[in-house]
Amino acid sequence: MTPFTTVNDYIKSFPKEIQILLEKLRAVILENAPDAVESISYGMPAYKTFGKPLVYFAAYKNHIGFYATPTGHSEFANELSKYKQGKGSVQFPLDAVPFELVEKMVQFRVVANEEKSNKQLPH
Image 1 (cartoon, rainbow, N blue to C red):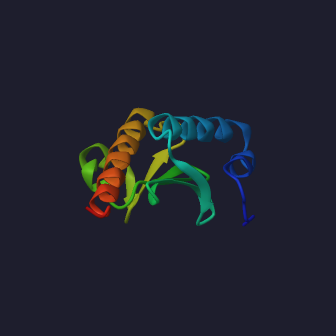
Image 2 (cartoon, rainbow, N blue to C red):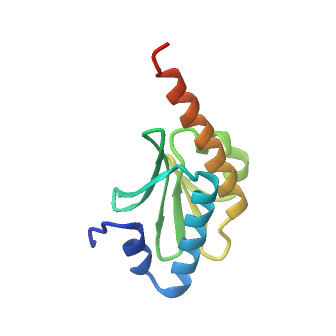
């Protein structure tokens, strides 16, 4: 596995049709979390807000892995139930990435991180 240093490098390592999907996913994340800090963590694109993990994603042969831990998956359990899942992860088929659901999950995680951040501020 190549140790990527930027999200651009990560995305460019895939075939063109996958790059298009990943760029769209990245755009949905950044549109809904404009203050997110983008990096590579665990070898995949990672986003943080308020110093806390927001979401991660990774491309595989037949799916996009999406990670909205810790609260994103439980909050959207019904919508995610039709997709293959692991602990804290969901697999979206390459031909049916639900960008509207990703948008809702990112928005939810932004609010969750903000609320967590506000609770940790000294009063």
